Length: 236
Image (cartoon, rainbow, N blue to C red):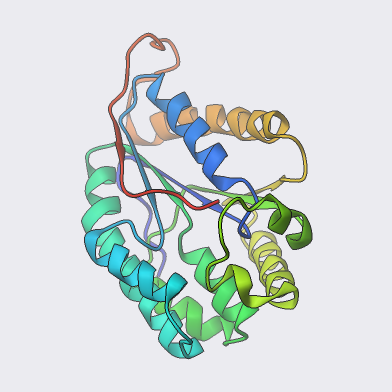
């Protein structure tokens, strides 16, 4: 069962590593904060103290069996939702997460070739069915995104082109299956072009969030500085 977010606004960014998520997350955070909204920026894995430990195991540890990997990501996500995301949404904050459950579906079901139904069922159970209002999928060929990486490869990034290609395709499959939630953005464009697409959509999201929760429109108060909470660092 899908659970709709509490009174705040929940947004996720997805895409293969090197797609440019970090840059756009930061821009969207600043955009909302400049309008006077409280913003929580977080990530998966690693958005909580437990998640930091799991992140080290998942991205920098040795070989992990595919099912074990899926369970560890689900454990990170369950704690993330309970400790960070739901409390922020109940405060009517805006939550922006760099990766969420769609990454598990793309990487474990697409890249690792587990069954989509198994990974989806596990992810929905871990999150209580909580889905973002909007998911921005920054889509780019993995060969292009790999050249953008400015750090050493982690365990996922070093899995090879075929793995990344399957992962990208699964992201696109997810977007086609849930077009009301996803906005696919061509991330091969320049940073400004990508940002313009996201910003234009975000303006509409703000109006929809205000209408659905009874909150006042906030577009007329850009001079108010918002409170920005950030958990952890981001990976591209």
